[in-house]
Amino acid sequence: MKTNEEQELITKDKEHLWHAMHRHNPDASPMVADYGEGSWFTDKSGNKYLDGVSGLWCLNLGHGQQEIVDAATEQLSKLAYFPLTFGHEPAIELASKISELLGGNYRTFFSNGGSDANETAFKIARQYHRQTGNPEKYKFISRYRAYHGTTMGAMSATAQAQRRTKYDPLVPGFLHIPPPYAYRSTFADAERDDELAADFLEQTIIWEGEETVAGFIMEPFISGGGVIKPQSASYLKRIREICDKYNVLLIMDEVVSGFGRTGEMFGFMHSENVKPDMVSMAKGLTSGYMPLGATAIKNEIYEPFKEVTGNSHFRHVSTYGGHPTACAVALKNIEILEREGITNRVKELGTSKLSKLEALSSHPNVGEVRGVGFLYGLEMVSNKETKAPLQDEAMNEILRECKNKGLIIGKNGDTVPELGNVLIIAPPLTSTEEDLDFLLNTLEQVLETIKH
Ligand code: PMP
Image 1 (cartoon, helix red, strand yellow):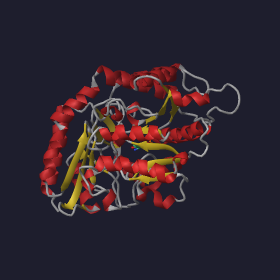
Image 2: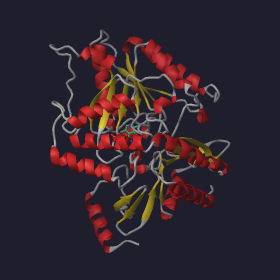
Image 3: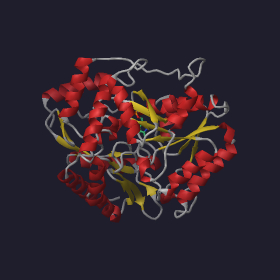
Image 4: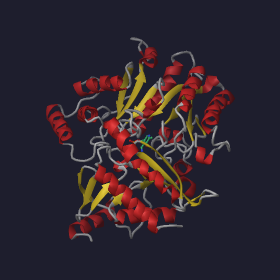
């Protein structure tokens, strides 16, 4: 039931608001969220929902963290805005905190979000190679199914056809290779899939000409592309070796997997002794309380930008990148993440609670359950033998039924069944055990009634 107030808002919404990702539907009844508490939010009519995807995988600490609100208020009163062409305390402190979290030796360039952070990485990589005697190195390689953002460069790295085809031509110089994906191994060899996927990177660099390849961008665990992960930590080690061998910069997109989501502060930390050349982050950096993007760059990569005269500086600026309030929020967010031992919490509850999702594998439409920490995907199929993806309509039915029972979960895309058949579960990292039980029980009940 909708209250009159909500109904009026919906009428205005239909006239004036262009919703992200949504097909026009005059009969739709959009959700009008009103307030949030922990992992839950309430709409204008008082209906409560558990947010099983943390907004857009960003609300790591959940709603209602008063300390973050206070930090934002204090910063806004003190210094409403200041650009990073100069500097301010929250950005300085945050840059040094990010370096510490990454194990030291990084310098950070701030922006407004994940797409922006990746664009920054691409520009730094091209300029770096130009200034170190490799002016022909301009190409970037990313992996099919990956999502790296919405702006033209980040979308060119994004390798999901349905998000790209209406916006061609995209930025030249972006290539794609298969990700490790044992369930549908490109190489028809599930056991050696990781190894063969890494070999494919090396082969591509050789075929393209190593002197032309500037960088390789990857998420440690593909998130929006359907929660796809390598089977072992050795994949990333091998990727690092290949990048080193051919002087290709390794850009780690930690926009989703950063800040505790997978049970480590950053997803790449599941593989020991691997250090990316650049790390892009956003979302969990502020737990979504303010927009902020960051690109952390190894100090060695900064070296050629150090010339005090000449034209070697990075001519890149964004008005709001590193906004003082966003940086103050991020600092408080990180303080809470650390104080509350969130990574251990995610490891423990990921194992004791969310891993119970694996039991859903016995459902006739659940092809594979994949997950790490608080990041899970259920790949849905209409036939387990052929692995034919479950169609969009059936996927939507599941989401709708969950919503009717007060649970919001996501899926990885739409229109093309092959790219939209993974149910996504990524609740706030502060979710209580009761919240997680509600999530598990509701999803199980819904799947019990929907079988195709
Ligand atoms: N990289 C990844 C892995 C993402 O999931 C996203 C957003 N979903 C982005 C980059 C882009 O971030 P933003 O929406 O903040 O631009």
